[in-house]
Image (cartoon, rainbow, N blue to C red; front, side):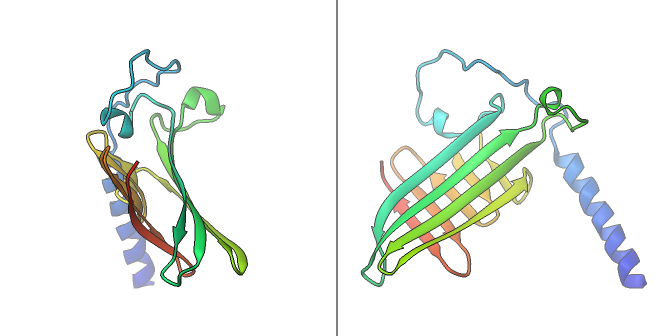
Length: 163
């Protein structure tokens, strides 16, 4: 019984800490994209005014075993607009989703995994540098190179790519 009460109290304290970390007033969503020219590196970063953003990587690699593989690693950011969900929702709640897949030709196989988290200490993006993460999966870097990191029990990737 003591453990249950202690765990409930700890959960309440953690929830209060997370809620207090949220911005008090989120930036307004902009439905029409601003008519600005593309500007790097700024446009690699997250944008508070955007409802949906994504960072998408695909490629072909040679593994440590000498075999050819295809991979895909994506990160999505979606901000809830309470006016559109048709139910009470906290204004400005942002979710992050990531998907990781590896394909092999010999032998033929397809493995994939995904993660979904609410923005906070374990998931988020930076507005002042290129970094997006969902748990321990991440992409970070600059306009010249980006490091991609994702792993589960069956597959892993930790590479630096250059556009």
